Length: 148
Length: 129
Image 1 (spheres, each protein chain N blue to C red):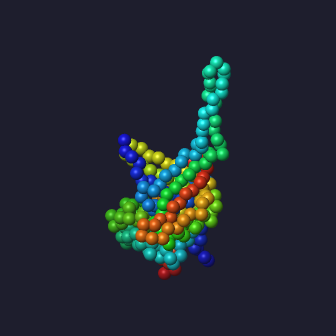
Image 2: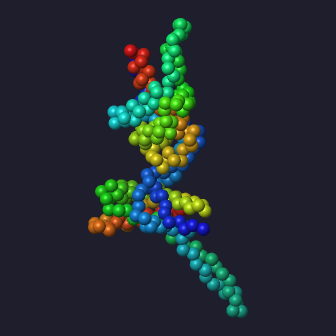
């Protein structure tokens, strides 16, 4: 079964204006697309940041079903932000660089650029990055972990 | 009060690096005039006239002549009147943002070649907002 997601729609909490076809339009959502090999450096850095933020695994005698863990975008961002092993500001800079490399489209068709990102609320930037981590970068890592 | 000496120029959601001190714009209110209407006895009243034919904005700046900038200018020209230009300027006293919608490069812009040569860009657009 193919577990890889190709697209994810992130609905904006706070709308903003951007230029489209000669007019200012109000953005509703950001369409996130799966990364490809041209994004491998940023993906690797973000994946490594997540794994560095994980606590050390503890020995446990419980027979819990660990396959049923549901990771949410907000949880991922809190985990990384709280980690002393990860520079959260640097993490967001790398994530922003990935977002503007044609993997994020405003309203599904306009490339996300730095001037557009500068209009997004901080909550939306972090939310968007969190969803990207969960749906694309970590999805791949979790699939590999399950297979191994 | 501080003079506004530089602006961030954004065209179609991308920031553009311009030649310093080259940006200028018009608000797009158009030409206005006052005419006299005689009420007799040597007295006149004012008739205020707006020429709506001129109610468009102009936004201009210069680009250094580089292959990247030449490519940008060609794309804006090919885009017809589907460009959006923004000027964003700020000083400690405040900020000014002007958006020019339906902007087009109406003139056949000149690409200067030389040490100090530039590409002068002039957009005509709907009145600024």
